[in-house]
Amino acid sequence: MSNQVEQLSEHESYPEKSSRGPPNLTVLNERRRAALAEIDNAPFSWFHVKVCLVAGVGFFTDAYDIFAISIAASMLNYVYGGPTVTLSTWQSTGIKAATPVGNLFGQLIFGWLADVVGRKRMYGIELMIMIIATFGQALSGQAPAVGIVGVLIVWRFIMGVGIGGDYPLSAIISSEFAATRSRGRLMTAVFAFQGWGQLASSIVGIVVVAAYKDAIIHSTFPCVVPVDHTWRLLIGLGCVPGVIALYFRLTIPETPRFTMDVERNIEQAALDIDNVLTTGKYVEDDDAIVTQRVKAPRASRADFVAHFSKWENGKVLLGTAYSWFALDIAFYGLGLNSSVILTAINFGGISKATTPESVYLNLYNVCVGNLILSIAGLIPGYWVSFLFIDTWGRKPIQLMGFCILTVLFITMGFAYDKLNASTSGKNAFVFLYCLTNFFQNFGPNTTTFVVPGEAFPTRYRSTAHGISAASGKLGAVVAQLGFGQLINIGGTNKFIQHIMEIFAFFMLTGIFSTLLIPETKQKTLEDLSNENQETYITGAITA
Image (cartoon, rainbow, N blue to C red):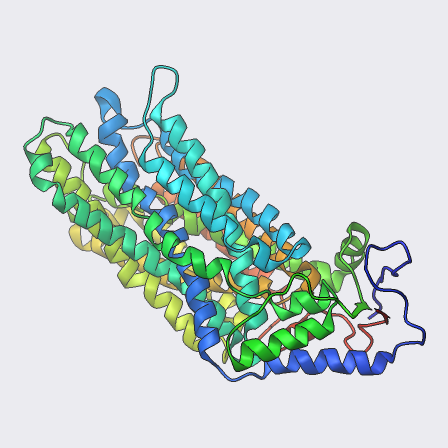
């Protein structure tokens, strides 16, 4: 496959002059492939564990901050819901949708910047944004000129930008450092921290509600002061894991693939590989003289269009982007509204509170309900994916997940009235709900994160992952806006069964988009790029 290569000229701002003799292109290409093979065949080491933990803590924080709002929204109803003790539909929707909207912008911006200036230079900046915005939410107040809901929406949008940036950066850094045989498991382990973050938000919710039990019960309905304390603690504690991880993010090395294929410095990339794989350390010398840069495909608007206008490349981006869009319609439609759904079916005695005692029970049961969903479905799904992703493969897992989710949502939708008519039926509904969480994670929620981190050339890998992830968050925004406006058609929470049927339709479409993506297991990132690696380097400029 031919590459559109931008030739270096004497006007380029490199310190080197043109070499006196023609470079040995065969040697340069072999040297590049040999250096990459060191990464691809490296034994699993402490450095890989460090990458997993550093990237994973970010996803832990992401999930905590995103999904804690499902619990906090119930608390905000009592504090800022006025005489009806309920936020308006648009207020609730705005608070929940602000973060996915921010995600969309963060994924596009940070995804592009990571390909332009480097993974290392951007890593940690997104975490700083998340920490500041999370802290800002916890300290938010209202005044005559601005309401608390508006302030929270702004802060949650800013937080969403930081969280969005974490997706392409963590995915690309973990994929580009991983060995071929274990790349899927390493990326899945990073992403699985999302499940622990959701679980932690439920546990913290239970703890803070229990800590304020006496204050809630002995206050006047709707218990504004103690409940105001609970949601601020719940949200604010999301800063803690981010602060812990920040130093390690700022000190993680640049990926050798970026140094080699984007900065086009093979010598430095080979040295970085040796240092990282042997000692796990990385030394950056900004004053080091670059003795040689190679000529290779360079990122540009024309090259991007040329690469992705070919169907064999464009269909992969279309497949990863739409699959993520379809999945997030249901994943965030459920995840950000699990408390609403549990309340609608009155599971565990969750109902509208009218006394201080019932306020406490309502909030406690909402937290416990979210805890059950995390333990019974979300976390097991991630780790079953971990076990099978490098043996069974990404594409079969994604196809299987979309197929089963289609059946589950059809069942939950068309049998909703019958299931909601009895206690055993409600328990069956919650069981099916847990199964959807399980097969989202042992299915497309994991693979839509993994595949875009593998299937594109290095110079566009982060950008393409950002586009795919942003498509998913567009689905999350559509789901949240639709959920908020549709759910009360025909009466309070009366449209849930039809929302489940809509989710089933999108899961069905995800089956067809999955057919566009390649199977990436046990293949090197270079083989997956659809570019000729034998003649990837076309020349060199030496000092």
